[in-house]
Length: 491
Image (cartoon, rainbow, N blue to C red; front, side):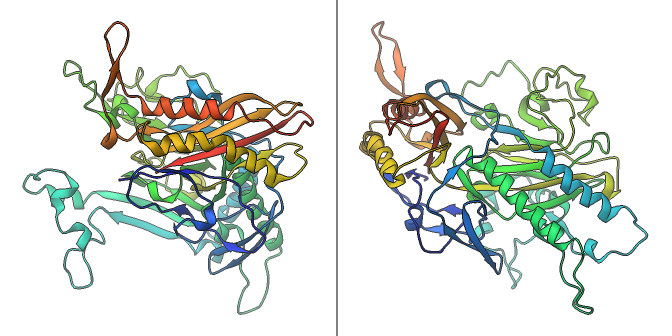
């Protein structure tokens, strides 16, 4: 059971440290506590940080970062979600646009693949990743691995004869992939000791990509990314449904796709209603794929007005999706979506091309390392500001620790706009994936004046309690344009 809460503060570091991809929490009650990241148990050792505020050295695919004195950020990159904290609702997908960096990388892609007859060692580093569901389920002795000793557990009930074999034959992943650093950072020719003339430019481009993505992540309180992959999908390639919960609070996909090059390739996410299917179930209605799965087009743009023929994008012409699937018109490359990786998701099968110049090309990974981020012209003692935040959130921490509020799971990032006098002008949720932990749901907790039952709403209770604590914050007076993002991670 995931039962721990972290208010994740900025770090006070002066020594180099190894950053990791995600926090591990153990079983127990949902005790509210502030936890510096340096004391958290962690998994993975390969998160990347921006060079704008850090000094970074790389060794064996691990990044060691030396923290600067401040984490004040001037970036204006942000996602498309911002609403008053008490009114915030679970938001599955966030969207932003990063056209400049995407166009630069796409230009290198086109140059790299422009002449298919010309041998090019830079194209030899791709992993043709093909995995069936049953692959890797046996150990070296040919016996079932411990995690899969009881295949019935995968279904929660007794499988039909032949079902396990049929399931194991399904394609889980089919694509071509390589690390983005390998693609952009050209290597030395060991035989001739010749360095490509474009090496320095491409090395710089890779770091600018990392900085751009991290700037975007900090807008929702996530200050690092996993080393990004670049993937190519051509005819028949797909990703079947899966989840990526351990890697970070948000997954991201940056599109390098050109309009009209292929059919399919949408990012698919289960509709929220399917993740809580039996609550409010209506047996009088049948559901088709559009009501079960979301198809997010690889060239989807958030602010576009959509009212289109669903069959113009949906490869399944038999699906009546017009009223229930989110179809957004194709737009130029550079769209970046971030989504809740706990939700079963995949990539719809690509059709129409075997040409790598016309495939589904994306850069993807995970945002991680939640920290309080400061934006704008802050002055004065940063440690004192963090002490103010800590003290203001103590009531929230204590309330969550008492069990008066039910358990929740997910990630919440709250942005506070500060006026010239140092008071909070706005309290906005900029990322919200909170869900009730149904293992702790208490149902009816009382009755109103009309004797109607009052159901527990732990998610709303958490947000309202956080809002009441955060809106009372006050800092030193200063110039306008100051803000901070406070992240909350519930596990």
